[in-house]
Length: 323
Image (cartoon, rainbow, N blue to C red):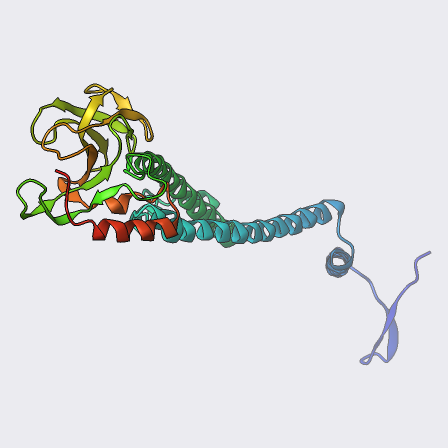
């Protein structure tokens, strides 16, 4: 049986029974419902603060993992960018300087990518800024590596051309001259053996027995073979490329023909006394870009530095030419 409730009436000075209406019960029910909702909400908040559901825990772990991966990726990008910059410095300051080439153009290394906002789809998230910055770094690194690859292709071509050039530049003596005693006349103003006047001697004269082998001093192609009995007499001109030509004069015999390819050290003829000559010898010239050079500066491939100094001295002291 429900307990009855009473309240004191000060007018009648007696306790009167309290009688509840349906409205009173509704109001009371709403109070209890509100109080219960508040208590329940506070309980949920407290529970959520201290006790997370498995799905939330899983998502938070994934977010933490992804943030760690972004940081790790940026650390790896730091290392890769360092390597790329090191390659760029060596490319510009070492590799290209060896081949006498200008540094790779900066605008081709750092060229941007045009178009609309490429990162629009990555915006609007908590980690958007970090992800976009990482994507930009990857893009910059890709452009650096593509440019470096193209630069290395250029260097490869330079190296290949340089190897061919090193093989083609006149670099040995045209006759065997280990004791360095065969130079009879050097480059410059010399006394002509016939006219007995000072005349420009545009090559070196090597004394040797008739029939001594004459060698191509660099790789090239036979430009001309002439058998005139005056002037240079039987002589050969080799086109080496890269601006170089060599001439071998007063030969007794020629064993090559125009258009033939020759390599350094190959026999092209034999020492003689043809043309305007006063004795068996080889007259040798080096022509670079149309200008006759002192051949003594192109014998660095088959003699020691000490021998080279001796050779320079001997060439300087040889006063009368043999042609």
